[in-house]
Amino acid sequence: MTAPTPPAPLHGPAFGSYDSHEVAWLLSDLSGVELEAPTEEREEAIQSGGAHYAESLPVEYQPTPEYTELFHDALRSSAARLAHAVGVVTELVLAERGDKAVLVSLARAGTPIGVLMRRWASYAHGLVLPHYAVSIVRGRGIDQLALRYLAEHHRPQDVMFVDGWTGKGAISRELAVAVEEANEALGLVEGFRSDLAVLADPGHCAELFGTRDDYLIASACLNSTVSGLVSRTVLNDTLIGPGMYHGAKFYSELAGVDVSGEFLDRVSMQFSSVAEAVRATVAQRRAEPAPELSWAGWKAVEAISQEYGLGDVNLVKPGVGETTRVLLRRVPWKILVRADARQELGHVLLLAEQRGVEVVEVDDLPYSCVGLIHPKFTRGATGADGTAAQ
Image (cartoon, rainbow, N blue to C red; front, side, top):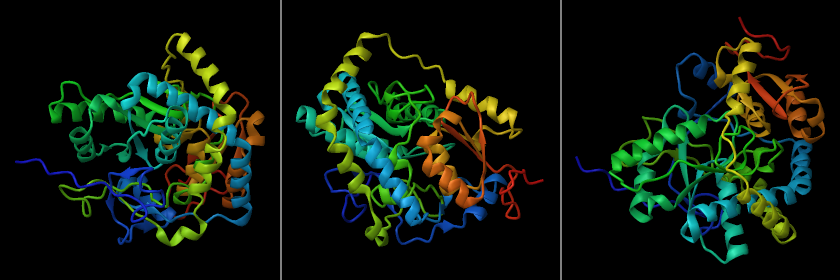
């Protein structure tokens, strides 16, 4: 059987609010399909085994004015720190892949980071790097048709996969397996490499990173309105057939509250102020032995899962970004917070208060915070008192 020809990528403004040159989406447009389900209904279906989390979408969180202000405050206070991390990881990628590098972001958290890395390469080196966004789904792998497209249009060994941050490392593991399968299926001698570039690697499981500190990346505060108005990706067999990429929706109706461009511009405006510090950091990092991939995040998650009697590491979401996702898209049970990190977690604490979720201070937490998804969830369980449903 002849392999299907991969479709052409999608571009803004027809799909997504990013300018057409900022990113090419290797996705299928499902904007006209009703995929959203109430959070509680999705959680029950996921935990009962009745549905995979990627088969539907959560209802898009509409932030309160107070939460929106927290986002803007966080962006203002962290823009230089983010710019420094963007510069460092981009320079490390260019050292690994050269000026022919092809950035391939893992949608959706990786996409704004990939756009910023592309901007840094242009700012610092005058390079115009290709940038794509592809779907990867825990338990289902990366979009193989998207990899076929990339192999037909670029040298696979030039591709660098990009994500926003690491948690316990599940996506790193998923990527390694999926890339090996793709190289074999495509018959590639010099194939794709599974090393991953991230802005922040608190899980100690990425080869290239801007920092290993677990701090707020402002793009984690919101959903589509900071990610080009594109939903998380969808892999639903009733909608995605042969010759189709994994899907996503473009929420064009949210254009009035879209801050995707503001996020990119505020960080990009700091490039010149951090350039010297980036050079110093990169020189130091390249002079040192390669950072150890200790998978400390995975080990910590296993310990937390056991301590709280969860019995499933997938219910433990470590780090600021993942904790925020739990509060925005899942049914949270408890939020663990390291006491000395509270001052940087205003948005997490506000969301926890709004959803009635218990916040537990833990002195020796290896992350700034950890989100615990409600175990054994049914729609009758609210989690407001921190008690597991029976």
